[in-house]
Image (tube, rainbow, N blue to C red; front, side, top):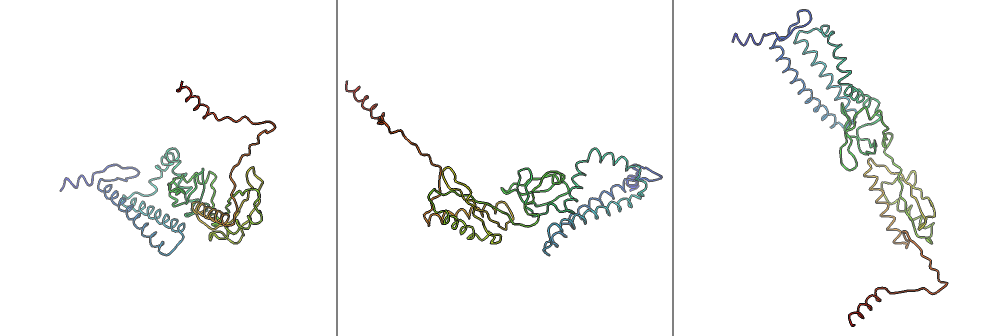
Length: 301
């Protein structure tokens, strides 16, 4: 027992004016810190779960939970220093070394951490927004301390460093509202009644429930193409992701094809007209028959 007391009270290191850290103190504080981290995560998840039940905005939930987590850690650190009987003033000489270490070794980590707080405070990007960055389009699922998690329209998750979310060009399709303007192009055969074509395209757009009536869909007779008369349909819809936008376009195309088929409107396809010079008789030969006849004659000989 006496031997255990000696080990427990063994001085590991000392600094400052009479500040000594014993083996027992170090073990106690380490255990306290581990338990505090576990409790911090547990209470953070419990707090988030309770707030989600109250239908609180996900961005507000994440901000509150993160504040709670960091305040808990700061209080834990202060408590650990008190358990070690280390006054904060004694750590002044360590701050210079920590500043150099942070400046060189953890610059990107600190940059992403600060960027996460800017994202949460200014809210240029929020949880649930549909964004586009570096040809990646998807919904923001989480804004962490280091990176932002985006679920692309194909279901793949992309982790983007928070600093890049502020430094690069980010297109936020749902920053103000969830209204998108979409377009569908269709070409009809020459000779089709263009006024009736415009009416049918407009009718197909209004038949889709996701298409907004205000602003009204607009049909533009865009151009006389090489093989078709080109019409463009522009409409607004209230959706939240690129996948839903493609589904709306598909539904509108289905409706256009059905209405055209019912009204005898032909959707044009590329065509080529070949003009032959008939000023003199055409020399037409059946090469296959000539080769067969020649082969039969050869065998008979």
